[in-house]
Image (tube, rainbow, N blue to C red):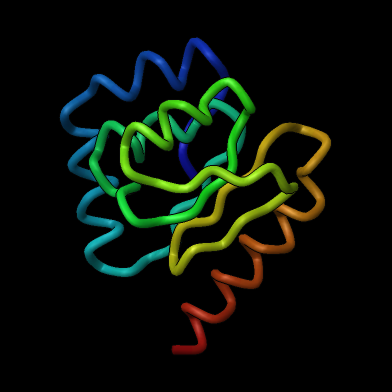
Length: 107
């Protein structure tokens, strides 16, 4: 679960250690969950190309510019990447994250 919010998302996306953490987590196929502006970190980490995700609507150009596909829905799962748009989507986001963690644990 990556930090979200405009200020947090904008600050952490520039952190090389955070970017490396996301890259290594993705490489290991472990779940990565982001909501709202948290999508900036996977974009800056370079793991969005060829993937489909959702986010706060203002990030859709960032997703597309990073080579991803942006969709407007409450939760989007693309492999190990779980994304959501906003706080109102938390019930669907939480269910998707819990399901992904349960599947990872069972494996």
